[in-house]
Structure formats: structure tokens, C-alpha cells
Length: 371
Image 1 (cartoon, one colour):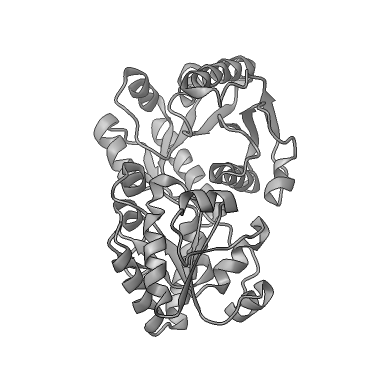
Image 2: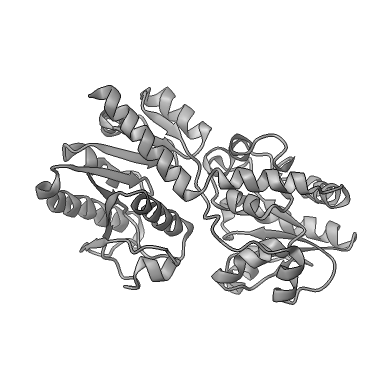
């Protein structure tokens, strides 16, 4: 059976959802799936996904022309998205036999086209959905729903009561060469001293305003705090009063080296934003764990639902003093090889290949039950 992976997204893209789409396509293909990725032909690089994301296998891509109004405000985005839905419908009408649809809900409406094609379909849900008639029809007809955390699954069950739901957080690619901390620090020419590192984009909804004041408290103890993931301009705009917080500029290929070089890695979230508090499932959770480094995390509902007790050191969200204190405690405490290995083992269980395998097995089991 062929799977058409439907993604209303610019591909390739520098954003995290692009990595997620590319890695899932790769994992499905390596699992033996005949897969084709359908995306809008937006104004983007025509570089192949294999080259852009460093994939092990090429991903067949069909780019469907749409009016590129995605950045022309909410109305323009709506027009382009519905146009993409129409193009997908026309493209798939003669390709339905023996095929299945799979999608990621990176918007609130384009995935609905799957319901009307009368093809079996499954969809990843990274956010819950409103109880609209269209969404109720969609969930009623789905072969399987993949929720990226338990809270999203709970909300979907409460609203739509589907019995075909599996929880699978975003994955990680563990097939990279692990480094010792000494090797990583040497490669990056990082000086002596304890280092706390945040990796990720500088979005306002993440609650990153705690980092600057926490960095000042940590500096008094001789601990450096670095952030990595956005541009220098973004750093200066978001962290206007950055103080001693340092910006680490790095090529994408070097991000892993920075994680290995750090003494502690930071997962920041906020209770003031619903997406951050309940619905996020950051890919960097398992990327962090795969290094074996200690992790300090904001105790949001989402992060607590993703991580078992003992995997990370939680602290109250939105509290820079508590964050700084927790980082100090982690750095002062004994770190054992056994604790590091537990983190690595947890990450390995969430490799993209294993994630894809569990999803395919779940879809197959639901298919068997419904046959």
C-alpha cells in the first residue's frame, strides 16, 4: 500500500516542523513503506529533502501549485490552504485505490480533505481541535490518530471520543557519533567553567524571559548561561536586557556538539501560555536525553507528561530564582554513568525508526479490528 503524506508546509524549511516531517517520511520509507510527500509549491528552496536535512534515503516529493499568499495575513493563509486542499483532492482522485493518507496538523483545516477522498487515513495531532461539525466528521472517519502527548490525547478523547488513538511524542535520530564532553569542548574551543545551555528558537510563547535574570544569578556562582538556536538579531530583539546571558552562534551541524559540551541542558516552558503549558512536545527533549547530559526542565504539564520522574530535574515554571537554584543543585550533585545511560536509553526508545514502526503497527492493528 502506498502512503501519501500530506503536509501544508513549506518544504524544506528551517523550522522544526520541517525536520519532523522529513524524519517521519524517512522512517516510514526505511520501514518499507511506498511513500510520496505532497506539499504546496511555495516560494522555497528546490533543494531535495535528502540534501537539506541530511537524510539517509531520498523522499519522493510532489509539489502542488498554489497561490503563495501564506504570508499575506490570516485571510491569505486561509485562501492558500483551501486551495492546497482542492489541489490535493484533484491529484488524489485517480490515485485512491490501494493508497492511504497520513498528515500532520500544522494548520487547523487542510487535513480535513482526507475525509472526503474516501481513502483510509491517519493523522498526527500536535494540538487539540475545536468541536466543530467538520472536525467531528474527520475524527469519526480516521483510521488512527497519533497524539504527541497524553494531554492532547485526553482532550481529543473528551471532545470526540475516538477509540483509535495512540500517544507518540516527537522522535530523535540517535544515529550520530556520540562525543565526550572534552571532545566537544575542544572542537568548539569552549573555555573552562560550568555551562548551562538552552537550545531552541526564541519564540515569545516559550517563556524564555526567565533566562536573562537566571543567568545573572548563575554568573555570581561562576556558571555561564548560553542560548543557541535563533539568529543574533532575534536574540537581541527577544532578550533586550540580556545582561550576562550569552548567544552561541552555531551551524546546524554543530548543534549536537554544543549539547555534548554543556554541563546541563535547559528545557524552558511557561504556565502562562496554553500551548507551552499543555500541548508542546519539543523534539529537543529526546535530543537532549540522547547526549546523556543532565537536564533542568520547567515543570509544565506538557513536559511532565513527556518525561518520567527522575529523567530530568524539574523546577517551577516562570521563576528565574527557582531555575537558577535548580541548575546550581544539579551541577553540585554527583552525576553517575548509570543516570546518563538511563537518559540515553530513554532517547533510543523514541528513535524515529521505532516511532514509525509503532505507528504502522497501530494502524495495522486498528485495520485488522475494523475488517
